[in-house]
Image 1 (tube, rainbow, N blue to C red):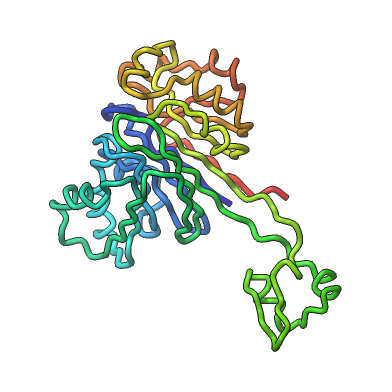
Image 2: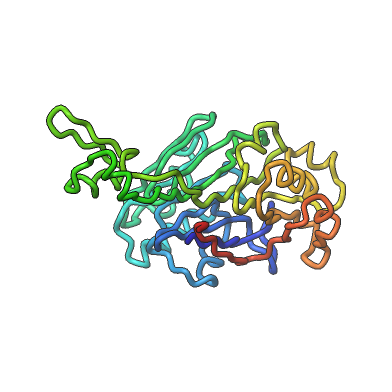
Length: 301
């Protein structure tokens, strides 16, 4: 099962009742963080999931409200006794940004594995997470992310026997390995059933809607997307390359996602004014994000 927490829901600057936008995912005890604005380690502490098993940090882009919490978080990880390397992923410019931010924490006790991705569609696997990246239009290079937890097909004994696969090779084939035995080659498809649906979560913030987005997030179990303004402020969001809640809902509808969480609200919109009733007319399963809102997504039977 995959646990998801929306650590913060604010854009631009933190407010007393709203931390900056960040998302934490937990699968088999290992964790992935998307974005790390000022105070992220504080809301992580309030959540109570711990720090030591954080393996990956993904940056959408390098505006301050998405990256300036990194030094404090690194120091917190060090104080928690971390020793294993931490992977940090982001658009072009990652090394320069991390070098600058870590001037104040050069004595951390673990290595940083920086993966600076080209500004193009990319897929990679880090630990428990399959990560897909889509470049999106913002004031600076920006990524949207899809994280997936794949599910192995079932092992089918009858199929293995029908293909005359020796039992001593079943385990390796079940794990996806190909086995050569003399002149005979055994492949995983000789013992495995049909592909099974995994878990898919999409995260999109600080950008305008683009044509590729519905396909990128298609059939996601959860789509977390910025909704800078609930009311119609189209010229404002176009100017700064952000997105309206209504535009996020339209993407969710086109992509057939199961649930939409809105986040990255403008500091001009207090929590008391976030009413997604009109947005639900576009996509009924829309929820206004609040700090540390969590859900658990399981594999389908």
